[in-house]
Amino acid sequence: MKKTLMLTLACTVCAIIFSGCRVINTNDAATAVNFDATAKVTPQVEVADKAVTGEATVNVLFGCIAWGASSFADDAFSSTSNNPLSLVASPNTLAKQAATYNACEANKADALLGAKYKIDTMDYFVFKTVKCTATGYPGVIKGVKAE
Image 1 (cartoon, rainbow, N blue to C red):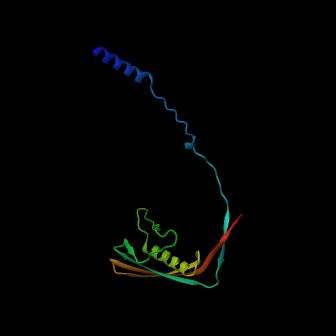
Image 2 (cartoon, rainbow, N blue to C red):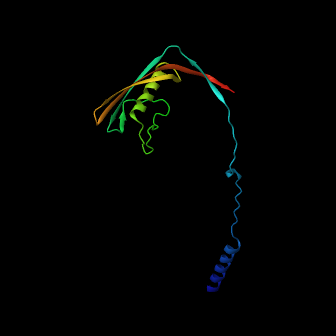
Image 3 (cartoon, rainbow, N blue to C red):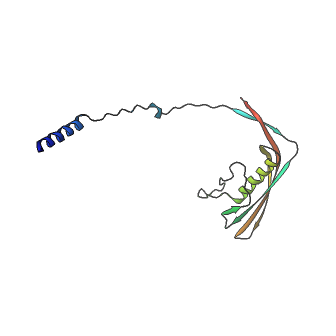
């Protein structure tokens, strides 16, 4: 019985050793495909003759907790300060971009061209209110023209 068990064990070990696995992985999808597809396009913008305005107010507590405006134009949460460690956008930037968004939405425009901003700040050391009025000409993008 002991010899049979030893013989079976030896055959099993030999079978495992001599019948190893072979894995071949030929995946060409991981190679980088480099191509350059650049096209010059110019937006075709229709500009109205009458200037429009939009307003927004941002409240700030302790210089970092902001509320009041809920919709912003593009890049509303990017910091424009010179401090690279700043994670919070300035209240002036938030108010400007919220006022721009409100002006565009009220006039069904895609952009506010020639924008001018009037910013009124009420600063109480711990609490700050920033009110912005954006004035400009509404532009509607009608398409793009390839050059």
